[in-house]
Image (tube, rainbow, N blue to C red; front, side, top):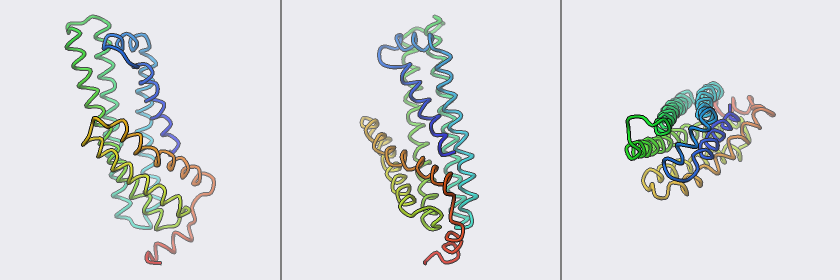
Length: 222
C-alpha cells in the first residue's frame, strides 16, 4: 500500500496539466475537452485515499504488539487523513461541475462561476493541508513505533520519523502562511515522500525482524 501513493501523485499531475494557467474560461474549456481524463485524475485520488486505510490497518496490526494504544492512535489519525482526502475528492468533482457549467452556458454568469470555482479550489487546498497534518501525526507515530521495535533498520525508522515531523511543521505553516504554501508544501513533502516508498520496498523485500521487535516490546528501555 505504500506504493499506492503513486495514484495520488498521478492524480495531481493529471489535474494540474489539464487546468494549467489562464483565465477561468480557458481552464473550463480545457476541462470540458478532457472531461474523461479529468475524472480519471480525480478517481486516482480516490484510490490513493482508500489505500491509505488499508495501509494504516496493516501498520496497526504490525505494530500493535509494541504499543497497542499508540498504534491505535496512529491508525485513527491515518483514517481521519483518508476521510479528509475523500472530502477533497468530492471538492474535485464539485470543481468539475463548475467548469462544465461554464462550458455548457448554464444559468450562472462567468463571474459567478469563476468566484465559485476559486472558493472550491481554496477550500480543497485547505482540506489537503489539514489532511496532511493528520497524516504527519499518524505517520510519525507509526515510525516511532518502528524505531522502538527495530522491525526495520533504525536509520529508516528515524528517516521516516524526522520526515513526518518536517511534513507536520511545513503543512501547519502552509495553513498559517498561505502565501508561501507552495514552498512549504514542497519542503514538507520531500523527505517523507522518499522515505515511504523506501520503507515500503524494504518491507516488501526483507520483511520485519520479529525476534528483535518482540525483544524490544518486552523491554522498551533496552
